[in-house]
Image 1 (cartoon, rainbow, N blue to C red):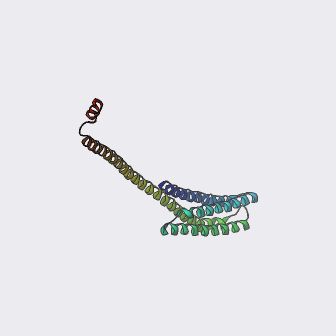
Image 2 (image 1 turned 120 degrees about the vertical axis):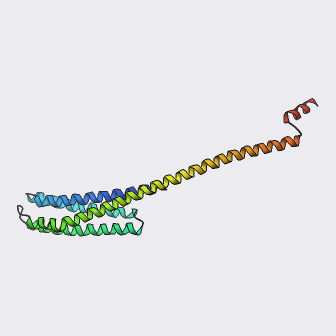
Length: 196
């Protein structure tokens, strides 16, 4: 069970890390679109931006099943909301970008640095916090499992030794009881029986 819990924490961390990476790549694609010199390049980068944002949302949804505490669920919800806010800003910048001529992208560039970058930075910070939370949970569970394992191992060793000692004691008592009932050593009794 502890292994399952550890894996669940690590799986959650992996989904969030992949979601963070996809969001960073979406931002890069948007910036690349702003700097593109041709319309096909610009469109390709904008399409990649949307694909990466969709990947990021998918990874956060996949991570939902690994959060159980109210605090963790609230942090995940805040992160998801920040991603949706950033997606809306990115789409607005993309729409602005499509209406601008290729060499002059001042409106979208200004928007990127005044609204997009601060939102992206906050989103990165929130995702990093989630990854750190999941890693800390995994570490704590792993340490707790090690303590439980050590305690159970010590208990099993003590019970095994106790069982061996109890077996030796019972065997000794049975032997003494039989010896008394026969009136002497079993070898002496066998010798008397053979003599008759």
